[in-house]
Image (cartoon, rainbow, N blue to C red; front, side, top):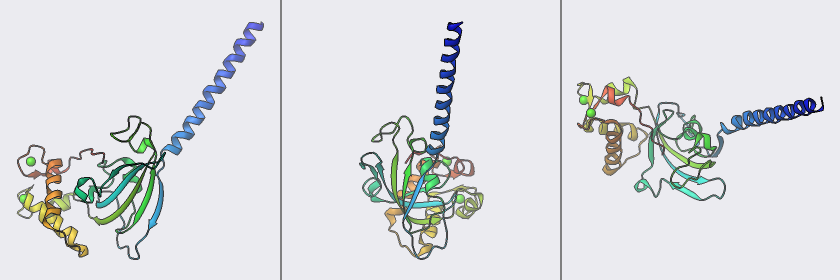
Length: 220
Ligand SMILES: [Ca+2]
Ligand SMILES: [Ca+2]
């Protein structure tokens, strides 16, 4: 009789522990899925806010929350060129896709991103496992996404249903210079090379509609 009671009691304690683990876990999950967004600078004029599918051009610094050490800086890496990427399609870590939504050109934000939305359990290069990271981002331009059928047609000047380097370059130039920002030729060389590296899967120097719609997962 006494033994049965003990066993029941132990079972009850185990149940409570399991329950609290579950509750803690559920709470932790909820907290983990949030990106903390702090606006550091907001420009006076904001004509267009970023949304999924837009092409963004931004500089960012990545820091570890625990000690503030910097693991990435687009101003020194990537030859100092601002990073460009398509928002909301997994080209960057999830935390940046979430944290850079609804942002204006000229705006600066500090994003605190939990590991589940950053580099996860494994970490990456200079980022240790399970690290919360902070990104300080400065957004330069927001342009309409390059990955819609409309933009494909717009880029494809000669209407042969494939994009040449010349066509991509002209399109980028037109989009980037809408806001009156002049860029030197090397700026476009880098972008065009990057676009073809990511999208011209068979390496024939042209991007077909099919190649155009494939998103590569590129963490940074
Ligand atoms: Ca073409
Ligand atoms: Ca191709």
